[in-house]
Length: 128
Image (tube, rainbow, N blue to C red):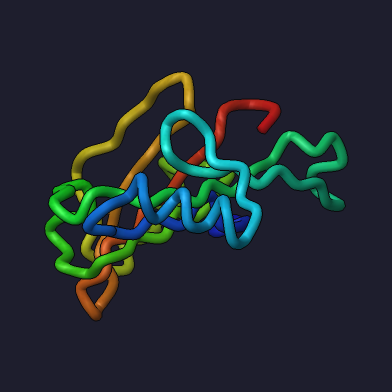
């Protein structure tokens, strides 16, 4: 079974996400979208249609989205079969959240690594 197939997103805390996103737009040329982040679209051997993406997004410093981790960042990893990966991680004794979310954006699950960093696993919708 394949586990991680790529990075789906990089999320980090900022005291002023809007100002920071503007700095990245002005100085590094990121195409900041209305929701405050940037989407990098890509194609590759396993994704010849170019429908894959990696999200870059600053979050407010006060966000609880990364909890229980106290780290100022969270990495989102793409997976092909979220349920199978989460089951395997649980069987291996990893700290996996019970919570799983499903929406039009795909399926999401979370776990914590041995250093206390929260990781997000993402199974994109079909075709992405």
